Length: 128
Image 1 (cartoon, rainbow, N blue to C red):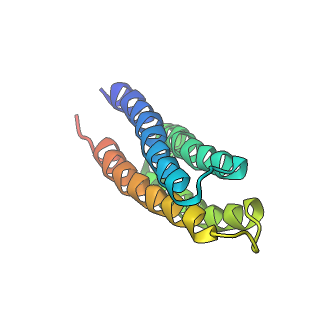
Image 2 (image 1 turned 135 degrees about the vertical axis):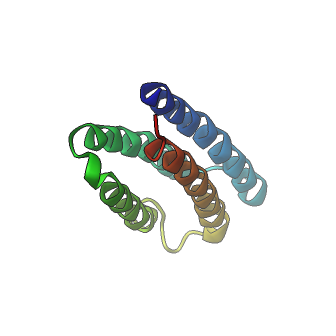
Image 3 (image 1 turned 120 degrees about the horizontal axis):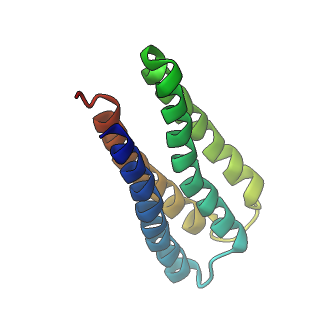
């Protein structure tokens, strides 16, 4: 059952990630009249970070079962550090309407993080 839950989480992360980031992209398009290519790259990097984190967590769970929670917190912390760094790298500071690009991106990330945390807690603490 654990393998089925793992595959379901990967599918949910990709599906809901693309769905929520697509909605955020629509908000950006409405606010700024265009979606910059750098915004799309950053949104895809954020969506990809969730399944990659789940894969790493699954491998840790197989080998070091007692350290899974520690690794989950570490992976989440690294993602939270990476988001502002990627925003700084991808966007010009003097870009007009920068808040129209960044706010939907961050709100969508926080929604995905909350949903992903709920799914992973159910997966990690599932008992046979």
